[in-house]
Image 1 (tube, rainbow, N blue to C red):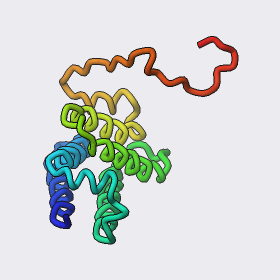
Image 2 (image 1 turned 90 degrees about the vertical axis):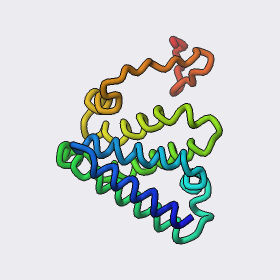
Image 3 (image 1 turned 180 degrees about the vertical axis):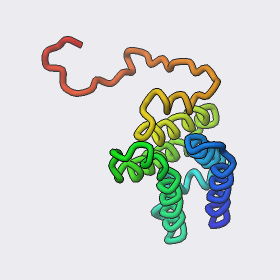
Amino acid sequence: MVAALDNASLKMEAAARSAVDWQHRVLAAEEAMFQFSVAEPEYARLNGTDMYAAGSRALEHREAVGKMIEGLLEPGYELAPETPAVVGEAIGGAIYALLYDIDTPRVPGRLAELIRMSTYISLVPFLGAEEAYAVVVGNERVEPVHIPHDRLVPVGNNSEGDG
């Protein structure tokens, strides 16, 4: 398991180094992390559900990956200096939540979606919604996701009954 942890970090770092600009370094690193997680289900399970039971080496790895992600985001803080420092930690938490979702049988068909979500979450605080979306979708046309009306979850308490 330790070898898988180290291998994942190396793949993320190599992917990030190969990109032409900061935004695409973020995309490449996250793509490498998610692809490795699908290829190595034990790694995904470790990151998603078993991290705290796996011992100190696994926790050290999680901390190192978190620091790597935060370091990868540093140029974003230069682009948007008003962004609170805690955003990097929140992004890391969101990415781990998405990795948790990989540890399910339906993921292979959702890999591209998870990579897009992760990268968008990572870029939007620094670039804004439109530019982050443009990086995430690149030249590909992304169809909107249709959620059946009966699956929508109401937000808040609408006491006036107009929605």
